[in-house]
Length: 230
Image 1 (cartoon, helix red, strand yellow):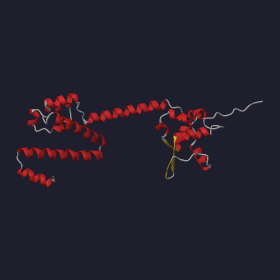
Image 2 (cartoon, helix red, strand yellow; image 1 turned 30 degrees about the vertical axis):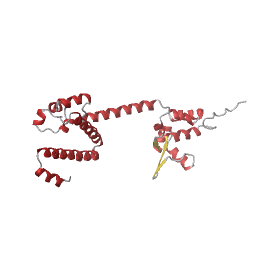
Image 3 (spheres, helix red, strand yellow; image 1 turned 120 degrees about the vertical axis):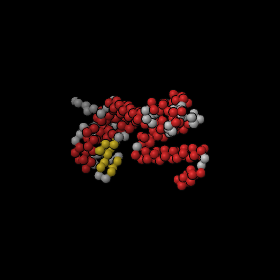
Image 4 (cartoon, helix red, strand yellow; image 1 turned 90 degrees about the horizontal axis):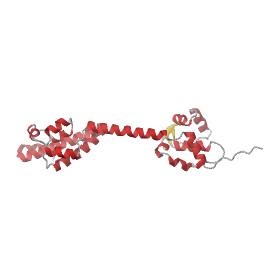
């Protein structure tokens, strides 16, 4: 129904229809707020989708009886109980809704943000620990020379696929940035894995294989022949 049709229906509706129309208006308001949240706050939008799904499940589990007498008397919107402090939610929630929450804990947007932040910290810590166990560029190049390029499969794919520009590549390899530019001009540097305008970047894998190939005579995976002395 359009807004004009809703307004016209309100004018002649009985009590039962008025309640249904009011519920539809609230649903549309929630939908509008959700669309605005998705544009301005992705985390809030994710929480809203999750909380609304729980709200619908609670409505079905309680047969629509989500407010106690106090909540009904104050004309509380049941959806509002999914926000704000727990004391307010419990003050207006029916015993059926409280029982539903005991099995399906209520989660506010603030708590959801805290959980997201905690998850991101755990992922960052895992990446840091993982990176600490990965050898440096020259150690990786030595392994490639000794065992072949397949040795790199032992290490995280996302680490080796990370793109480094000339400055960061030089830092990781332990060389001067100028060396990269000079070797590039002389055709002694690998082709970039990504080029954006004048900027070029190489994956760590490309850099390790390049370093391994330049470490000395021989080929990656084939030990160098030792020079015999008389």
